[in-house]
Image (cartoon, rainbow, N blue to C red; front, side, top):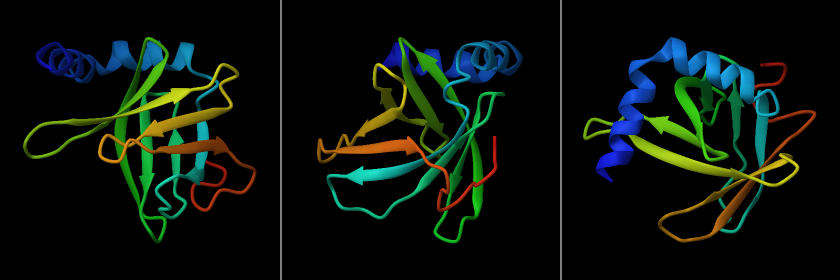
Length: 126
């Protein structure tokens, strides 16, 4: 856990380096992804990934909050700052990079995200 925290701090401390690296290696990720399957049955939501290493979380009325993401060993880590320390959500792309799978640490169930033509939020964002 300690080394993971240092990795997060390093990624957040050097935004220019992290931004350039993210932009050059993740063009497949940029755009809006929507939850298309959730084994826990929660409602659909959407995420938008930007080429500068930021991602947008959408609220129930499509209100936006902007955070940072980074890649490590092929997985996408979404960083959520919290008062007690950052929380990371980990998304695993399939081989074709057409889906992102999030496994809930609480239930161990999966949610699948895909790029869709008409997302519930974030249409036209990139």
